[in-house]
Length: 629
Image (tube, rainbow, N blue to C red; front, side):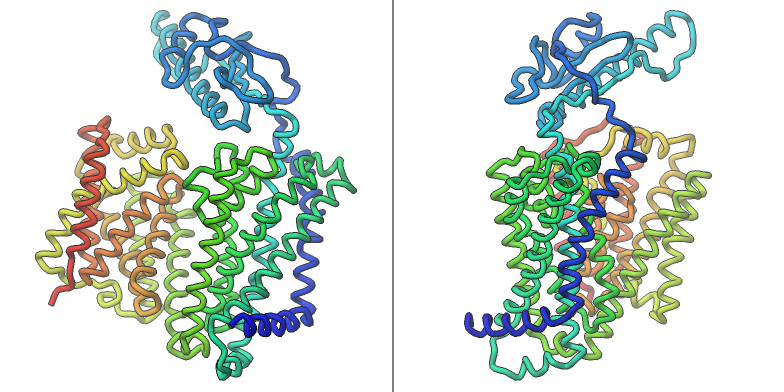
């Protein structure tokens, strides 16, 4: 097989090198993107971005746990969780123990100094700001009450956060926030083109049939095509890194303004291994997409949304609070992006980097396995009419989901900002349920059959009630697990609860938050969208994709994963029972319990034992559902 793979590789590579478009993309995109990034970044930093408030502040301060401040504020720091009294200064290099951050109170301004390159220092600064804000509000409240004046929200102290990182660490962090985005963009452009030409293009040209008539192993075919796509990706990545480094040499002033002054030859060389494995992931994804697409037109339509989704992790390195934790080190694409930043900033941990590299290689191998299985199917290889119809149905389902996201984002939020009650009702009935009915009518699909609007069996309905009662526990488990990485903002949670309670009656709130979303959202997601994908994808893939859409539909990063987890259970309940009413029942009970908790027990926090036990019961209830005879 090795000889066949090498022979095919040389043949495919010669074909790609003869093509002017492929070579132009491989060379022109990284070579033009590097100077564009330097000039554009410098323009943004100079004319658009706000000035760095930390510049110009030097010297040492007493620890946040020192007593050089009002006794009441010192007491507030001592009483707060995770802060303790200890004198010392904050070093710019080396270990920070015991001083993690410092605060100086002067003329009504609390200067908080910290090290953004150290996670414990960032956490201490965050805790400090929170404690000082609470202290400030409490002092103002006490003074107003003493004067006999009504309470109002005001700040007694201003907070100024000062970056105490070294210049090298800061420059490396800035460069590490930008370089992964460039690498990812260059890789996507080149790998998408090469995959389209090597697989989808051969389907339309008919040359794939000639290849199939030979006694070659399908694994050799997949391996050779993957090797060519990988070579194009790695080559473009190396050219991009070299172009960025040369740009910092020929235009050092612009590079410094753009935040690329921290690029060094050693740092870029350290990125070669990470870039290679990032290229392997991208090459495997694009090859899988090309194998699945029945035509070049279908591939073109799907490549843009796939490209946009894959570019999302490129923004993670720009967030200082995002670290290469155990969870992130095994997250596809994101692991390589954050690892690249840490390598450039000089804060990389060997264990985390190793885990990121190993998981990247594993994901590439798994995706290649899926591509090999797809290329082993005659209908996929030859682009049969059945495969095209299935692809069209899946594409139509995704378009309906994207239209729903756009409608809720632009119109749903607008009408809810005008009047929350009527806005919620209008969003659910007109934009969500209305989209489901209208899309099926336009596509000439029967509503009842597509959405599985059939009566469930008594057993399945009872199991749906049990699962609905336990569904909040599953959402709580997922929310707790993701809290160290993406936590729900405290202000948002408090404001959301206040808006839900408001001045409305409990019955109206249950109607707006529980009954209408249960029916309308299920009609769109587990009804129209899941129904349209029937026969196009396997049930597990269908349920997962619709669950992810359902999570994105809630328009907040902290709610995407917990909501998607609930969507998984709702989707499997619909598939197993063959009735939409089971998921409607579960959804309505879940939301209703949330409303009742806000009204009756707003401060209730379930323990881990209850969360895990309830989640297990919920999963077991859905697993016990069976299609009625």
